[in-house]
Amino acid sequence: MKVLVTSGPTREPIDPVRFLTNRSSGKMGYALAGAFTHEGHSVLLVSGPTNLDVPANVDFIPVETAAEMHDVVSKHIGRMDIAVFAAAVADYTPATVQPRKIKKSGDTLALELVRTADILGSARQPFGFTGTLVGFAAETENLESNAREKLIRKHCDLVIANDVSKPGMGFDSDQNEVLLVYPGRTESLPAASKHELSLQLVDAIVLLSTNDSQPLTNHRFPMTDLELATQAALEAGKLIRQNFGSDATVDEATHHDIKLALDKESQDLITGILLGARPGDALYGEEGLAGNQDSPRQWIVDPIDGTVNFFYSIPHFCVSIALRVAGEIVVGVIHDPMVGETWTVEKGGPAMLNGRPIQVSKREDLAESILYVGCGKDEESLRSGIERFHRASLRARKMRMMGSAALGMAYIASGRIDAYIESRISLWDIAAGQLLIESAGGKVELTAVPGHADAWSIVASNGRVPLDEIL
Ligand code: PMT
Image 1 (cartoon, rainbow, N blue to C red):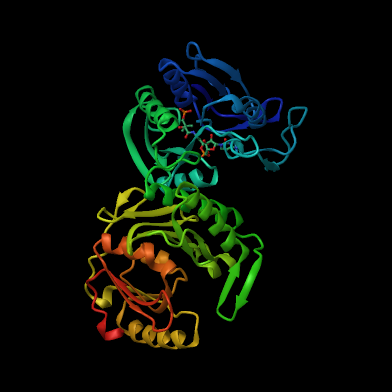
Image 2: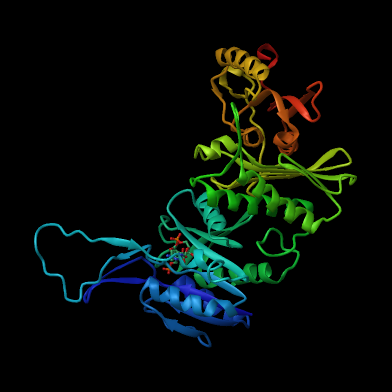
């Protein structure tokens, strides 16, 4: 396969004798280039300045600045099968380069810096790269969630995350320890020399690139219903995230609710992915029906749960997708595109958050609990919700009214909050969350609201906190 690897730091000149740079020896990228070649692949290494020897049989293009690296990558990436971005590219460069050495004058010196182009972030668009895209994330905190955020934002198939605050790891060192952050799951590779680690990384990347059954990549046909639902949720999440903070087109506004054009756009995207892969299925979403409504297989979709939060730029909303087969929910996915958290579950299997099993909380005492009481959208459920909220607030440690039922249920499944109560909610808000909570050891009680198809009153909890007295 043809592989492009970026490596090393970039140097951003200030004047003929000074530059800004990032810490990077280039060892990680060079080791990867060597490992790909060792495994028989054809490698182009694009690197900023380092003291290393170019590995044997590797094509090499040296660059100095981020702009040069951007130009070289844009020119060559189109013919590659795999692109791995290990370079520590400067995020800022001086607005102007002084033609002569800046003379000392005064105690301070202000430099105006401007953003460099995001090379990895340009790979899919505008470069149009459709191969396997692998980024690195050099982090000093929140390693996995920051890497997952980059995975989504930069449209990667894999982000290799290293904690560069750990002594002896990451920058300069001969050793590294990494997390492999894929859409929907995370794996860790223990500390090893960059050489040994690179051989493992090459295996993982080549597998990703060649294995058609590999789940959850951005551009391959997923095999299982869970993988398919996860891919649809991640793609919709990407769309929603890209639009966050910009002016949204309002399709409909009522006193207590808002519908956006983006709700519909997100559902259309999800419908295309789900029914594109499973053309005989039915889809029942907040934005309407699609597919074969006689099918026993029905996807239940909330394309943005928490639209009002989204509209007011409150970063708490999600995509919720469930699959119901012959009346039973068998798959559930809830994806929070802002935090980069994805909950997944299959009937009979464990509830997972970003690929790790989760459990509801063990709290049994209301006085230690956090309760989410929703108030609905109509006058009656607002009234009953407020009365419950009042009763519960006198007993619980804290109350929350977060604005996304599905995310609230995912939080119960993860043991973050203990119960969610609402007197009227739609099936698409709760279908995935119900399977998640039950699979994580909790309990969900639904009571049909008379006269309304698929509207429910819900009491969802860890199954331990006593709720009768506040209902
Ligand atoms: O070179 P070594 O001393 O061996 O150290 C290895 C390393 C720590 C540099 C390497 O393992 C690593 O983490 N490289 C990425 C460093 C980095 O800049 O990460 P980031 O989180 O800032 O960037 C995220 C991703 O976007 C990276 O794949 C980076 O190459 C890419 N990027 C960033 C900015 C930019 N303008 N263009 C980019 O392509």
